[in-house]
Amino acid sequence: MAGNFWQSSHFQQWLLDKQDLIRERQHDLGILTEEEYQKIFIFFASVIQTLGEQLKLRQQVIATATVYFKRFYARNSLKCIDPLLLAPTCIFLASRLRNLGSYRILVKNKFGYAYTQEFPYRTNHILECEFYLLENLDCCLIVYQPYRPLLQLVQDIGHEEQLLTLAWRIVNDSLRTDVSLLYPPYQIAIGCLQIACVILQKDHKAWFAELNVDIEKIQEIARYIINLFELWKTYDEKKEIQGLLAKMPKPSPLPKDKYLRKGGAKSSRVL
Image (cartoon, rainbow, N blue to C red; front, side, top):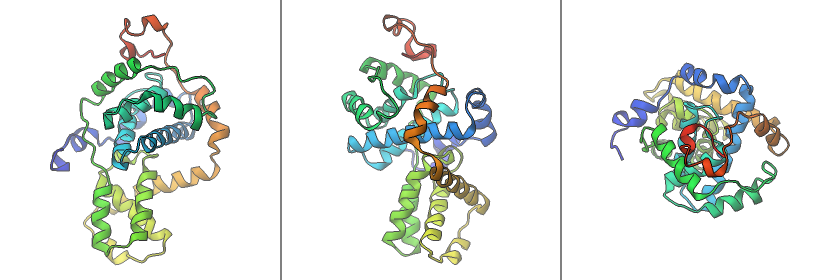
């Protein structure tokens, strides 16, 4: 791993501008509203999280897979690759595990309310998709996460287990937003810690005031996460997700025997 975040590909290539992100999504947002788009990504973040937990992966690995997923669609339409295929591909790339059987069972048992048909992909589809994912990530696989700076920040405050546990959970929740694409991980950690302090009614204002950070950026991060919490209050995923997935832009299907001959995912058509 690169020893310095500021010299890493994460900082140099994968901190994106919000306007660029909006522009790249114009095709999808011509079909979906911004809220519908976010709900779809909340769902697939949950799919990645659940698969990672089933495979007993560390949270940092699950978070890395989620960031891969978000980076891909930051520069590609949903119609390019079926997210149902890309989600396990991101987990397998982040973890180097190859257990498609677990994913097939997971989709059937845990997410049957979203998908009524059998899981359509095989190992060869995952492998093809992995090459395409690597190409789109420009082989930039190192992802700095907010967890380490969060541990350091809480230690500096004066280690409080309750505060750390809640802030850690809020960092996990932040993966359902765009903050991992827009802000350095240490700023995300501070934003999540600030929210945790407010929820737990812990007064650390003097400590936060001494930090040498852009407070406006921290507030922006906090707003992203608070908006997610507000969305969750009214989002009934089990009732809504089938309709959202039906509305979502989709790849053009190819007959199975033509998939590999046509270049698989590189043709922007996936089974």
